[in-house]
Each structure stands twice: as C-alpha cells, then as structure tokens.
Length: 198
Image (cartoon, rainbow, N blue to C red; front, side):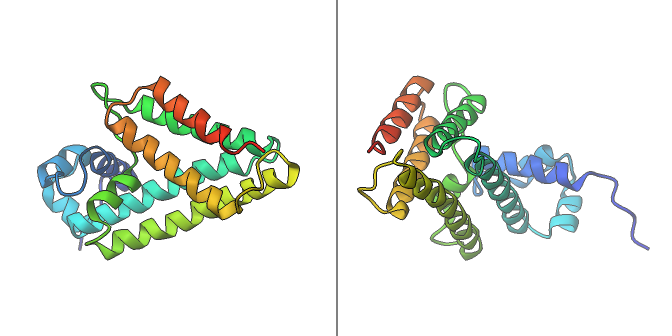
C-alpha cells in the first residue's frame, strides 16, 4: 500500500513557481527545485512526474492567478474604464517593486517563458496563447467601454489598443527585470494612458 503524502502540494507548487519565475526553466536545477519546494528528488518526481510537468503546472498556476488578479481590477464596474486601466498598470509596477532583488525586478513568468521557451515548447506556448487571449479579451472589453463613454479615443479598434497595452505591460516587466526603477515605470504607464486620450 502506498504511503500517504505528508506535504502540502500547493505550497510545493508555489515554491517551484517562484523558482522558475526567478531563474527560468533551464537554469532551475533539480537541487534548486528540492530547496524551493522542500521536497526530496523522489517526492518531486513521484508527485509531479518530471521537471517539465512541474514547470507546466507552475506556469499554469501563475498565469491563472495573474489573470484572476487582472480580471478583478478590469471587471470592477464601480470604477470608470480609464481608472481601471490605471489601476492595472499600478499593480504591474507594484508587483515589480515588491519582487526586486538587488535593483532588478524578476519580470513576469509568462513573458520570461515566452522569451525562453515558446519556440521549442508547444505545451508552454499553448498555455501562453490561452493566457494572451484571456487578457486581451478583458482589456478589449474595458477599452470598448471607455470608447463608448468617450473616456478613451476611438481612433483605433479596441483590439488594437488592447494589443498596445499588453505590449506596454510586457515591456514594463522586461524593463524592470533590466533595472528600470519605479519612476521610469510610472512614466511609461503615464505615457501609455496619455496615448488613449480622446
């Protein structure tokens, strides 16, 4: 009879997610995973099957939690559309600031994974594509609402503006990872929001 698990699988997944977020997939060793999860090698492989399977689960967990946080902001109809977008950009900056290590941010696990693996890992690429469509849809809805109220320019289609904002956010995450400070990130956010003005 198999012994019951004596560890918190969610906590182990969180530890692995954080490690992959900070180091990337390739640079995370099995020993790093043992340290991050608090598990031995056999427990990691018995529970998650492989490093890649653990990575896919961690990436999915990260993408879902980040998208849920974004949705909570963008779906808040008590705020006008432009205020929701401003709050979303503020959340991106706050997340980068809270995760700084020695002046450098850790970026976004999704953006980092796209740069590291999307061309050679179809499973990761599929998760990233699903996440992209979800985020673009949420942004598009808020932008369309803002265009309807006259708060956001109608010069571009909502999808085009959503793509622009998504690229801005990804660029902010990479810039933070390369050491851009809070003031610079706030300037980028303000410029992006100014570009939406009617």
